[in-house]
Amino acid sequence: MDPYTSRPAVVIDNGTGFTKLGFAGNAEPCFTIPTVVALSDAVTNPARATTGKGNRMVQHSSGVMADMDFYIGEEALSKARASGSYNLVNPIRHGQVDNWDAMERFWQQCIFDYLRCDPEDHYFLLTESPLTAPENREYTGEIMFETFNVPGLYIGVQPVLALAAGYTDTKREMTGVVVDIGDGATHVVPVADGYVIGGSIRSIPITGEDVTMFIQQLMKERGENLPLEDSLEVARKVKEMYCYTCSDIVKEFNKHDKEPAKYVKQWSGTKPKTGAPYSCDIGYERFLGPEVFFKPEIYSSELATPLPDVIDKCIQASPIDTRRALYKNIVLSGGSTMFKDFQKRLQRDVKKIVDVRVLASDHQHGGRVQAHLLEVNVVSHPIQRYAVWFGGSILASTPEFYTACHTKAEYEEYGASICRTNPLCKGKF
Image (cartoon, rainbow, N blue to C red; front, top):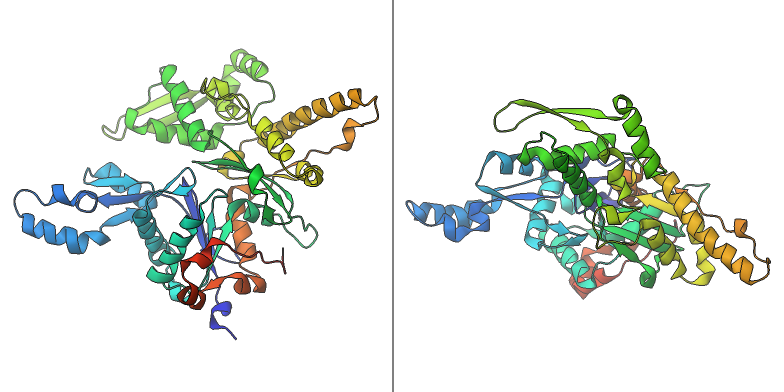
């Protein structure tokens, strides 16, 4: 018996904003931490650190000790706030690894300080964006096999894993459109029988971070008493705690104006520098924040295509024999799909687009086509915030996972090119 199969695989879902990590077989990740690294000046700018008095000692530190002088996640954010000697680095931008040195450091602390496991004892499942270049998979393989000496590695495509999150003994559906909205990237990805239809992938430049910045902008324009250094964090918390999706933006404005006491919320906080208390109102931004996905022009005049239109174009660009199944299974994934009634609004708007087209076709063909025969269904579930990670947890819990992984022996024989593709675990999916 392979000794590695008796230990749970490590599942790490690296996102632009947050990384989820834990062990296969669990329903939720053990940790969800911001994907950020705080590096000391000695690491990011050794030339500046080695000037002035005691430069030989500082140079020794920057060369030998400073490699360990870094923090990740919430600890990194607090270190950067408290001290001016740390610089924040985001290893992932718009879903793609942008800084491999920072990414390696980030994985190092994820494995040793958070999960507290020996990477040589566990198979690993990592996730990637659907538009990741094959070269990036090679870099990932090199780091995992060379630096961490993992016995086996599987790199899963995030939308496929999000579909797998809904896979049960009674529902065995691996065809659908995954609408994955993260903090730094939004992708609409069609999947047929577990395989991504690469030519039909669509992405839009509106993400969870844009919603946060729009809320910050709205509160600033209204003159709310927010400390500058704290305003982005407050906007993020407002987004997570108070925002919802409305069915009609005009009616929502009227409701807020007629009953402000019912709809306007209060936010209280303490200024980080002075410790003085402050408070502000949370009004229209509660529904205007999520509205950018449906009316992007309210956020930027350069954006014109709403998310429902992008989903429809994605499905229409897919092979004709898959379209009916794709409309039937539009799956939400990512924290920025968790707004109240987001699923209902998206389903309604996509259905409208489809019905208009089918009715126009029906008119052209003399009434022989029936609009109601085309079903549109947007799937929402309680774990959609962790859908990708949970799908990875399910996949890495199956015996087929270990046979689908690339092993250290294969890497040593064939090199990093083995990581360019990963077979699906067809025994399960």
